[in-house]
Image 1 (tube, helix red, strand yellow):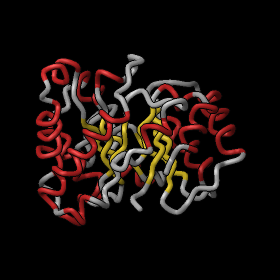
Image 2 (cartoon, helix red, strand yellow):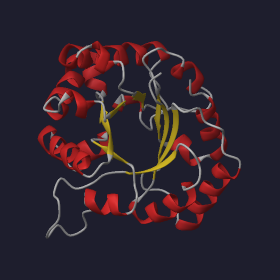
Image 3 (tube, helix red, strand yellow):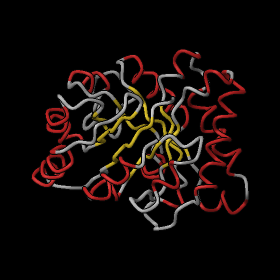
Image 4 (cartoon, helix red, strand yellow):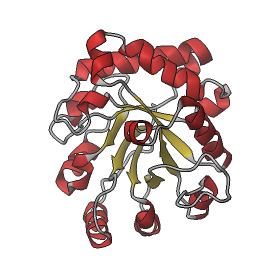
Length: 253
């Protein structure tokens, strides 16, 4: 079975005290995960060492950065390199989140560079793709996300692409309270898998985890995750609430 992943994206939230309390609560009695189930905490940069120290010793619990630079090193004040993340023992990095694309003008080409450098330093990219409301309303969401994959990922070899986790995030359903139906999520995930299959073959495409990232909550996770091409979630607001995130972990296939 493909890896089933509950990834918490804390975004720019919590003080260090709040972060430690949340991690302690979630890890005091961690769910016994099957080999194919993983929990990933994408925490703000200052909290990476804390999160790493907390998850160490807990099987299949990991830490992610929320971004990294497309440069190896140098005079880039305020940036964080993939090499720095590797040196902290971080295993995952979220790349191409819609907020990074919108607020920081990250292009397909820049994201391709970030994917490359993350892989160079043995980080697993959680690569985000998804459409805004006007694209969904126009009915062109399939071609829109297809371009995102092709422009940023399709330079990779078949071996490399299997090291990527994809997160589909309908931008119109992030932080709005709106949620794509489970059937809408499945429809897009199946399309993404077909796009991957057309490029790399069905066998490769069937190994790649595709997460859903649009207002996943404890109350809807089981329904969404039950779909055959949905392999878990990239969770925002609900990941800041211990009870909700536990329900989301429990909903993994």
